[in-house]
Amino acid sequence: MMEDEVVRRRRWLTQAEFLDLLGITNLIPGPNSTEMAIHIGQRRAGVRGLLVAGGAFILPAAAIAGALGWAYVRFGTRPQAASLSYGIKPTMIAIVVQALVGLAPKALKSRSLWAIGLLSLVAAALGVDELLCLAAAGLVEVLIRTRIAPPSASLGVAIPAPFAAAAIVKVAGAPFSLTGLFLVFAKIGSVLFGSGYVLLAFLRTDFVEHRHWLTEAQLLDAIAVGQVTPGPVFTTATFIGYVLGGAPGAVLATLGIFMPAFFFVAISSALLPRIRRSPVLSALLDGVNVASLALMAAVTAQLCKSALVDWPTLVLAVVSAVLLLRYKLNSTWLIAAGALVGLVSQRA
Image (cartoon, rainbow, N blue to C red; front, top):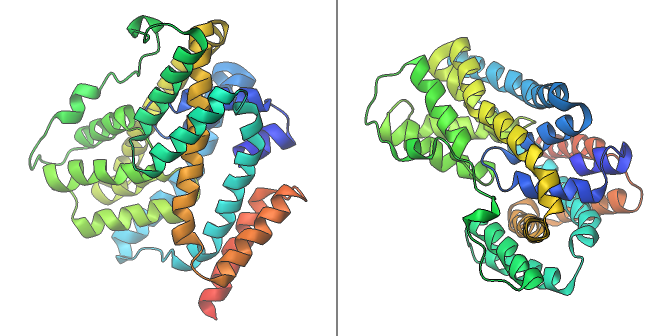
């Protein structure tokens, strides 16, 4: 959706610039979609753009998740996402395919990048860790383009994770506190790589196993809320914060999990021009960009299994792809139409 909005429609970025931001976003911890919004805002309007874009992307979803947290505590209910997901998932498949079709020609600039992309796709399909795929793709392209020994840490591309040591700290049955809530989510936001689904493992370890602040059932309810609400899945933190600590807990949990993203984006954006001027680092970023698209393709293939469950969903995905690729329909309207189809099908 971002690629469609800021590259195709508004022309705020070129496809090459968008790819660079996508690649560097994959190299830093935190929620990728949120960090892309923050990157775009900073590119458009500096620090003010960074804050406005990040806030605008996070706050609507956080407000919805907070309201659902209130309803959950007040009435003990959660939204039923099945009908919405039924119609939305096929349209999302088409949206990702559109982005891949648009970005691939810019990323696949040489035979070596084609080969790296295919190998990354195979590795991702076999379950190889996402970060390992990205790092390996970047290093292989460096070796091919420069024909030098394996690069050392002097390349200057380090994964910033200042709170990494905190990730292995185990606090069994710790008493609940708002400060502790904030610190746990700050740690998660500082070290988590990958999709929102990886968040489930972190939340289960910290909140169910170690601290016993949530039950398994409550955790699954929280994840369901993160999936059914628009915006970043990380707003699951807002819901959990409200369930555990009311409105103050919701605010602190949201700040904790998203604040590191602003820091990492500010640091990495400053490095991007230097990376592109360096032949070695530019090759690294090209490899990472190709691997990023391969990961998108692999995830899309996996999602097809749960999205295209019958003939209606298959037809919806195909029609959506045609409307996007041939007629350039705005993807926002397409998602709304998919949600409507899901609701109607559920009632029928």
